Length: 139
Image 1 (spheres, rainbow, N blue to C red):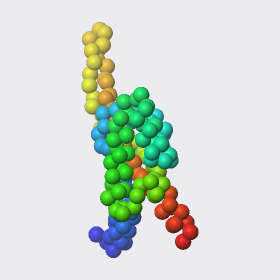
Image 2 (cartoon, one colour):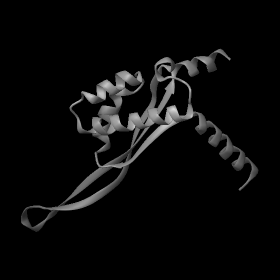
Image 3 (spheres, rainbow, N blue to C red):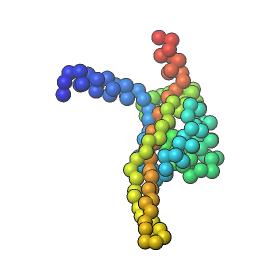
Image 4 (cartoon, helix red, strand yellow):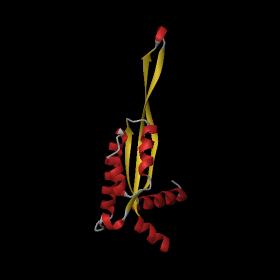
């Protein structure tokens, strides 16, 4: 590995130490349906986001709620001694990428077959505190 590549890799590694995130892989829901729910909580405060997800009737909301709780736990792990209530946590980023597709065949009339694509997705949630963001802007 070259020196520039190693330096860039170390820089990315240091940046990731300060970021609290949680990733859900191969979730058996189509990305389109998951994005509808992800758009509801993007940029909102963590407590408000949890309430939105808890009372949403969509199936994807249950999985996202669990993922958000995991991201909060990861944030607590990295910031020991800091209370969640005082830190003003919010959903900094949330994005949904498509994952593998299971291809199945469904019988159709006159001996034909139609392809069914069972989609799945990857979801990434990044949680951050607004107070740390304000401190960085002041410096």
